[in-house]
Length: 261
Image (cartoon, rainbow, N blue to C red):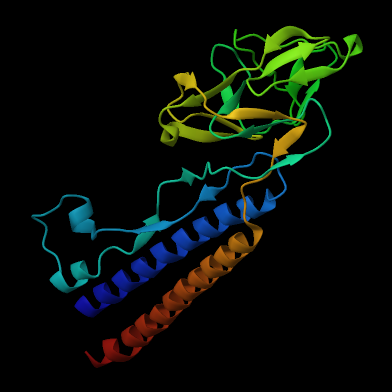
């Protein structure tokens, strides 16, 4: 029944292609949904070729079919990567909105295990603490502590290094930091990034500059994202069509040639 094995292998290859394309489509759709989210960094969703099962699992002594192995094992989703490319920084008119031009992130959250963000839409809460407008997460200073700003005491000016001035007096400095290897970063939701290894980040000084009254736009190219979603959808549909065709051929083979044999 070698012909049955060949058909099953074809179904498996098509199934791997369909699953990878559906995963790619989901990631790209999420990118597109955040096309207007300040500081959003899109995921680079791709696929990679998979070795034949005997090669992938190191089962080199197992009997196999050389012809099938030359076909490989289909495709699978490539490791998730985040595109940290600079997006346009646009004015908002809000003095507490901050955009980063260049490399670096705002440091927010728990001082002992902070997260990073490029979403500089800030405000003050009921305690006059500087927080992210989207979720109320506290923004940290260079001393790793929350920043208190009493807007009733006068207008705020923030320079390119994040030093906060009120009535010409420095009251705090917003922490701007980076990591030496951004591949360790993963999305934590609501525009924040943390270590994929569940440990505190080893932060280094950032080289970017802060722009007051501005925010960084989303890094999503809407037209490009739409085109990629369409391509991923067609790929998924094509692989599903191949599975259906191979199922029909298998059914015909069993019910026709099986009786003859």
